[in-house]
Image (cartoon, rainbow, N blue to C red):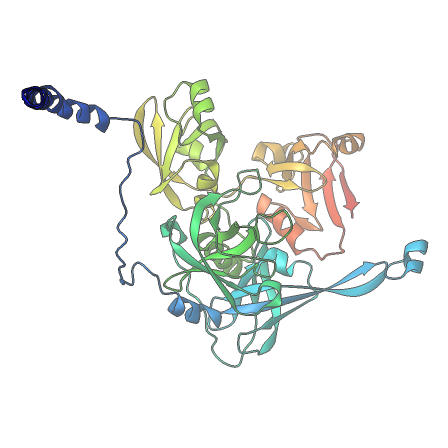
Length: 468
């Protein structure tokens, strides 16, 4: 019995010694261990609040925006007469027969008097355009004007009453993550509404950094082109234009021309009959890690100016090669599509404030945008406004200077005695005083009309060339 009591006593004593050691050494070390764990690289897990909140801010209400939009979005039917083989005999003998080709899309009424904005590719080459409203009334439409570069077209119908319309919103203020609705007629399903968020802004799809689309995940399919992208207030912030797809149907990405660009294009067409572009006059590329290392800067965002075009607003304002543009007005510039997209909302003679970094210092430079001084003419290449000195050589007071031939046509023109630096005087009989005149002459010619170009050759003679 005494041995048992002794064993129990020894066990109790050992437990007390162990407990005391734990209290003395282990617990005192725990705060230091916790301090080390708090700076661990492991992700921090924080339980989420699963309590439901019935606030309207959590679940946006699209009903009002949809009701406001549906009556202002129309179904566009484009009928074109094309020539193509129809029977096996046509294929065998190489014959073509005229037939009607029908395409469909969407459009947005932007005024009670019947002006409708849509995509250029929806109505391109149309012999007849018909519009069906949400109330099933049908009207014939007239093409007012179009801009292929932005894929925007303006058409008009004559109705016997004021029409429902959408007001342009400010696409510059649209935020990534904001809810939007796409309204249109996919697969000829009239008055379809889909919802999503803005996934990105200033997207370039061309690979040439000339586009500046709003990207959304709202479902858009063939037939939605030209339809409305609206915010939850029902304001028009974009014209649905394209999808990114392997099979032609929606797979999660859709793209819209921002409303600020569409509004400017429409206003120009209404006022001038064509688009009035204001250019800054800089050449360069967007910064990234690689280009930043090449030019010796720590900045990886912004637009690096490698060259400044002569006789432009940028040159006159003192912008130099090596400058890094960070903002234009209040718009941050991280890539060229940011720059080109914002400038598409501006006109010649508009003034913008360019925020740039020069030699590590921040400067704000006011720049007046000017009209383009050069353009591309098919079958020739790059042409520029001619200086007085250029014109004086040939004793004329109008014409454009051939600046650089397209390589495909250079050999032909050289055989004809036409060199770079020669003067083009007329296109389709219209005198050329500026690149605007050339653009207008080309745009206003009929579909089957040849391109007629009058050029002064090396002997000083005016020679007319016809191209089909």
